[in-house]
Structures are given as C-alpha cells and as structure tokens.
Length: 419
Image (tube, rainbow, N blue to C red; front, side, top):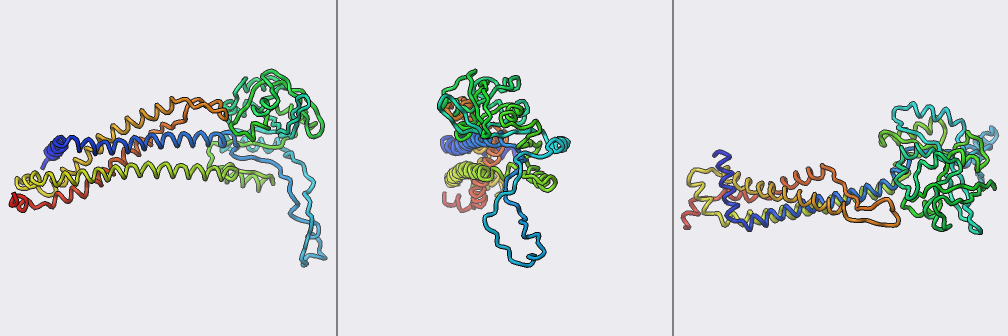
C-alpha cells in the first residue's frame, strides 16, 4: 500500500486513543526534556570546574627541580665498578632553581607552530607583613598582559583591573584570602619580605580570587622585574616558563621532547591534573547513564501502550488484512504510530529541555568562593539536542518493533470467526 494511506491509518488509530497517545508522548517528552536539562547543566558545571584548573594551568610547565644526583662519585670509580654500591644520606646536588640560558629556550619555543604563547614566571617565597602580623605566601612575577591573554587571568580579578599592574612596577595583585586576613583594601600598601631579607612596599592595584582557598590565602602577582628585585636577582633570572599550546593533545609529546632536548623538567597538563580529569570523566559517565536510563524507561512505556493497542485493535487489524493489506503493511502502520509518538514527544521534549536549561542559566548562583560567577553554568551545545532526538527515535522505533511484528502475524480468519 502507498505510504500515505498507511500514515493516515496510523494517525487515525492514535487520534482514536488520545489519552493513551498523550501518555506515551509524555513519556518521551519528559525523557528527552530531562536528558537535555541534566546533560546541559552537568556538562556546564564540569566546564566551570575544569576552567578553574585548566584555564589557569599551563599546558606545559618548564622548571628546574632540586633532586639528588642520579650518578654518585663512587659509580665513576674503576676500582669499585663491579662492586655493590650502598650509599646512605644522599644529598641534593648544588643547583640553581632558575632556568639557565632561558632566552634561547624561549625563542626556540616561540618558533614552534604548536605553541600559542609563552609566559616566563619568577616565583618567590615571601612574607606579607601588616603591623605585627606576618603571613607566608607565594609571589609570582608575570607578564600580566600575556597572562590575561593565555590563561584568562582577568576572569579571576574581583576588584580593580589586571592591566593596572602593567603600568605600576611597585604594584601587586593580591590574593583575596591574604587581603581579608590583613584587612587590606584597594590602593592600600602592603610590605613584602623575601626569604633573603629583601623588603619592598607594594601598592594593591587589584584583588585576585581563584575559588581555591589554598591559593587565595597565599598567592599574589607582581611584575617580573619586581619579583626579581625583591629576591636580589638579575634580569635573566627566571624560575618557570609556562607554555600554552593550540592543541592540548600535543602537551604530553612536547613535554617529553623538552625534557630530552634541554635537560629540564617539563610537566604536561595531563600529568599535573590526572586526578581531576578522572573525576570529570566519571561525572560525565554518570550523567549520560542516568539520562539514557530515563529514555529507556520511556521506551518501555511506549512498548506497553502499543502492545495494549494491538489487543484493542484486533478487529481493525483483521479487517485491514481481509481487505488486502499485507502483514508488512500492518507492521508499518504500527511502526509509524511509534515513530509519530517519538516525533511529537521529542519535539515537545526539546522545547521543555531548552526552556528548562535557559531557566537554570538565569538562576542566581552567588558563592564567596567564585565571586565572578553570578548564574548557574549551562552548556547549550547543539549536539545534546541531536543526541536526544536520535536516541528518542531509536527508542520509540525498537519499542514499537515487537508489537508491530506481533500485529503483522494476526490471522484475520481466527479473529473474524470469533466474532
């Protein structure tokens, strides 16, 4: 039979049982709607949490690590070459924490097409002093403009502006936790003392808050020259080089290249945040598992309704077959019914899912730990809507397949004889 005739019969059957059709469609609607809302919100939340770490973390961190010498003097002795060496109390070798001859290294990295940008960093252990109060802290000398361009540094500024630091060699962007403990405000001065005894009075040009208390209670930022001066170091003194790549997937291989070529420690972002990445994957797996389960449950509801519809439509099926409709035609009619339920429920579900996601994204989300975040994070990736639609169609198709096959095998003679 022509598909148009079969579609018309399928639509007539569905309209004859409006309540059952509505219930079956609602199962798909709420399944898809919940799937879209849940996945959009959870992936948005994961993106926010990832951003707290990944946006601020360089793809590759290059530095010098203090560690014991791998080769001890006795191992170079011909006399004890074949002897068992037992060495106690190995001490670290005398080495500088700065990166030696760093300018050629930076120039070489900038020429690499995989590299998006590089920021040299001068780290220092300091004490923040306010009256009789002293707090341990970390001071990082950075190029604030590059730090903002590559690592979204401006997103974590709660008061003031990050560019104020670029124009003030005696300025400091202080951690919000430090400022709170020392009762400091914008444009106040704070005294900073290095571990070598150097003192410097710095003006607070902005507040920095990452959302991680351990960092906000210790960390602050100054210009590179300021960090070098407070440690009494020359201008070529660099403790770290932070590398941002165009593609994060190149981080592992490039870090290994740097270690082998330049004999420096190079830690890639994957190794530095392995536990965090594992947590993100687990959360995503749970989100998709729960969402897909909802759609499967909706599919069972459609199966039950279509199964009952067959028993109620036995006479209609028998008449269709007696008037020339084949078993294949009957099967297609019931499959069309299932697909119509999936399409109607799917469209309404997508609308509800999008509306719910928008409502969540407009809901206030105020927390002291994340002062720059004002609303709940939601991910409006179109692929979630495509996945929901495809899965809904597949679920309704397979939910209607068995009842449709059952209907196609109905013997019209047996049904009509019973009548």
